[in-house]
Image (tube, rainbow, N blue to C red; front, side):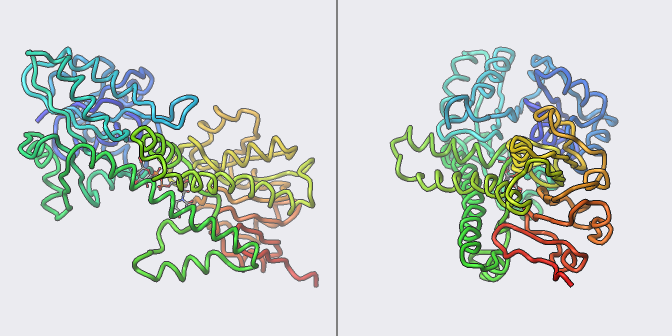
Length: 445
Ligand code: UGA
């Protein structure tokens, strides 16, 4: 079975390489020439642990090629859509124009039977609309079936999540749809290993994806709202989360309070979900997601205020070291990154901000060229009046607080992710601050 993957970003490039790893012959297509040139040379244009080796293996054994020429994709019979659906300018809705464009470019080249498998996150109703569009474009030349197979991969674990997903969701237009058999063949390995497959209609499959991301976002904002109350009451949000997490109905994952969520998915997906519910007349159903969004955005301002107060009430002339600017560790993605937003706000507030991230420096520099980008942890800490842990990379968690104390001007740390060993930092002479937890001050003796 020959496969095309349309769109070679974080999702598409990983999916193309993983499908080739599973033994299929794959062509990855993108309009971005620089991206295709990099992938064709066997390099990943973004940081994703474990992707490089499987990409090169697939290319070496001839199972994976990349091109900007979409007509090459017409030789395949299965076409995955993996293009972006960002937030539309001036609205909460998702911009699905890339999904439409890629099908408008592909379908005129097709003949015979084809299956289009959508993976991009789209508003409910998109797949049905695309089927009608594709039918018109295909005419009598081709029979093209559109189905939807939402993607649940996490950046940083994309390879693992693609090869061994925790579930496979497939939306099809009719129960007898031939797409089901095609998808079962594609995921035969995961299915044989017992991965559950949930087959639904198109709308349900589209909704599963946005509902999953909305739930995760809500869980994070819930604990961050509790964090605000903890601060007011002098309680400790991490202890609350730990205790809640023992209840299996709640679970501890995604209950890490701190700077909140960012990235290319959760923020825009909750907004698009609200916008679509409104279009469908279910306006009131998701108004709580506005609050989820607002709680999340407040985290960034709050962290800036905490840093300001820790620095004595003014940021002017303060050297602030920001550890991390990716939206989360194990990624170089800075789209809607809370860490980078905080670094930018501190700088605009008058601080001298120095940033270091193990992977995201180039992407950050492109967005915020005016910040100082240090070459390593030692440089970023050097002369700092306050250290902000903004993205919880392992190397920041492993910092030796005694050594770090010798590099800074004033040993103050603000843990924006509630991840450092507070007692160890306190014992090394640091004043330790966090979101949702009482501050710790070293005794003056
Ligand atoms: C998210 C979902 O987790 C994936 O299942 C989904 O496939 C993907 O979006 C997508 O729609 O493509 P991802 O954006 O890679 O994946 O990132 P997450 O691991 O979900 O983290 C999102 C944000 O939440 C990060 O900024 C992270 O720092 C933050 N977070 C996460 C918290 O603030 N607290 C937590 O407890 C967990």
